[in-house]
View 1: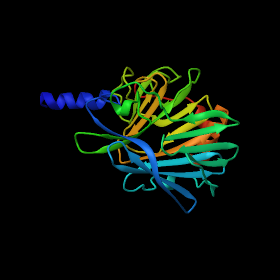
View 2 (view 1 turned 180 degrees about the vertical axis):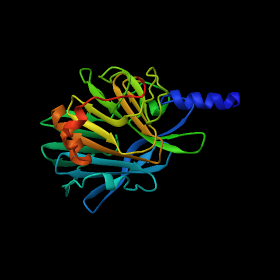
View 3 (view 1 turned 180 degrees about the horizontal axis):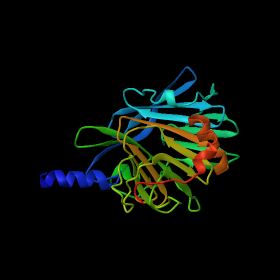
View 4 (view 1 turned 90 degrees about the vertical axis):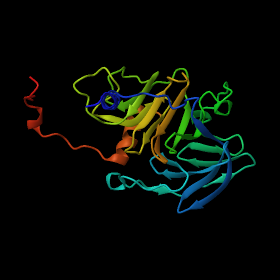
Length: 289
């Protein structure tokens, strides 16, 4: 094996955790909503980008207080549908004002702002979820972490990303098996299940899941089989940024004031396991011992 191939093997097995936001890359950041339409109970919003390109956001609302958000440029295939339960879709009552669109459902208010683009979810006047809007750099359209848009790679691929605002007292849990603290605030993770080579000192694991729960009352599941990057307050301490390495960002956003309720919303979608048979609690013999 050549030295270069050995290096590639090391990068594959142990991960190369590059930041989502790199100053030597080109970014197109969403700046406004330029058009909207409704089709089959799904809302569509055309977005204008800082690099003059466009993208499309689609939103579906479900009876169990779940929102499905997709962000894409050309198409948004329904992937893994055979593995997901059919949630009951509700017809959104879309209202339009001078500066925003809004939908009320199950006690939540969802607002999509037009020119100063933002996506905000509130309940009883209290903010549950919103995009990251903090300014501070001369690049990334002057954002510390751009709220939504596309990252362009040297391969000419473009990957969609989104950044949510984090509160100081907010805790986040999830991402599957990670050899780090149970509370995920402050880490950077790449979700791609692969061999660990019997080590637990890296981000690589067999059981990574692109799923996070927040104590603010929301959860996010990225519906993707591609490598997905999560920056949980690492690059910016008050920003949660997500980017799959594919041409569509497909997310389920679960809304519930308790972690137990959020897990219930997740299993509404994925299904719940049955009770294990008694014999499964017996002696487990491993070939490693």
